Structures are given as C-alpha cells and as structure tokens.
Image (cartoon, rainbow, N blue to C red; front, side, top):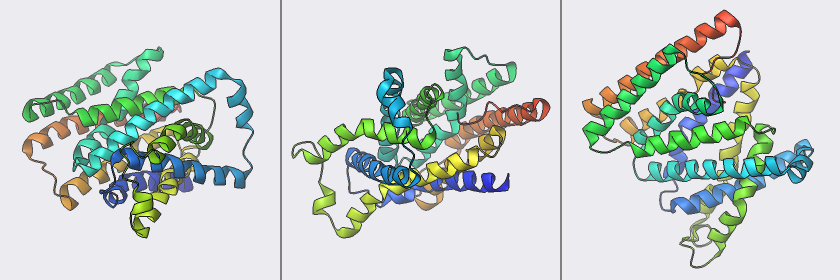
Length: 297
C-alpha cells in the first residue's frame, strides 16, 4: 500500500505546485497556454502509448460512437476547467482556484444524484455547511465565488462523464486531448486567432516551458493512476486535499493574495464540511470494507 500512497500523494503535490509553473508563463494568454498544453500532451501521451504498445483501445473508440461522444463531452468539461484555472492563476486568484478543488468532492456527491445515488443525513449536513461557507464568501465579497464554483462544477461534470467511460486514465486523456487538438491547432496557427505566437517569437526558455506542458500534464496523472489502483478510495479522498491546500498556501504566503478574517470564516465552514465528509467516508470504509464516496471518481 505504501508505494500507492507515495505515488498518489506525489501526484496531488505536483498538482498543488502547478501554479509555480503557470506563473512562469504569465506573459502568454490563457487560451494559448491551453492550446500548447493540449498539443504537447498529445505528443507526450503518444510517445508513452507507443513505448507501452498500448493501442487496443483505439478500435473501441473508432467503432463505438457512444464512447467517442462521451469523451468529446468530457474533453469539453476538461478544457473549460483547464482554461479557467490557467486564467485564475495568472490573474492572481490562486486562493479562489483552491476553493474550487476543496469543494469538488461535495459537488461530486451532488452530481451523483443525477445518476441515482442518494445522500445520507451526514452528507446533506456537509453540503449545507459548504453551502453556508460559499454563501458567507458571497455576502462578504459582494459576489459569488464564481471561479471556485466553475472549477468545481466543470471538474465534477468531468468526473461524472469519466465514470461512464470504459477507458483507463492514460487512454482517456489521450482521447480527450486528441478531441481538443483541432481547435488548439487552429488557435495556434491562425494569424488572427488572438494567439501571441510566443512559441515562435519568444525566447527559447519560454518555448521549452510550453513544450513541458505535455509531461507536466501527463506525469502526475500517471502517478495518480498507479497509486489509486493500490490504495482504498477513502485514502485517495484524504490525499486529494493536498493539492488545494498547497495552492492556498502559495496564494497566501508566496503571492500575497488577500485572505482576511471574512474569507477565513467561509473557508473554515467549508473545511468543517470536508472534515465531516472525510471522517464519515473513512468510518464507512472501515465498517463495510467498501470504498469511500469521498474518492475523486
């Protein structure tokens, strides 16, 4: 179990420090970063699949329209999540982005209602606590924490779609990035698309950073996939808070984003909901020996 915990923990840690990488690309527009992330992910994932000789899934995607449509939809949700997150980081809204990934597990539960899952009393209390936190943040800021909400909704929708897909994490991401590739290529190649063409006109270091978007995207996913198969989902559910916790600390201490008592109060309500949610998941997993609902899906 230890290798699984270490691998999954490192994956969430890498996702947590992802803002450090994005800040190096602050001069590049978000859609351009997204497009390079798609292009170089396709290149990197193709090399990994070629090395592993893992191509059996291609036939099922090509011959089954339902699989293809599901992954087109999940690609749209993932692309929306990526571009919102990229924009948030480079707009100095890392704390708002971290909120989205803190509340994603609770949105996963709510989205589960769409496929016939039921919430027990404790889960409803958790949702109510988190909603109170979001409500408090809305009142004190004068507007909805829309960055966090959009990130949570898009990623939860992505998770819901991937629950119904038959491909593994690596193959699924390959299909999703391939689905996004035509739009990414058009954006990067058309002169009037709004791209700054930083890959060509910028310094070599910037070009290398854009190429690195491929492995930066895929390596944590591979580590997570390796780890998640070897540990209970109840542990995954706890480890997943590593990422937004690191993002929150980066936003406060490294980038000095505002985090006064009003915002702290809202986050405490949300953290209380997550603590109760995770505790119930661990207790249920211990009592029944079944996976906790607090996993990432």
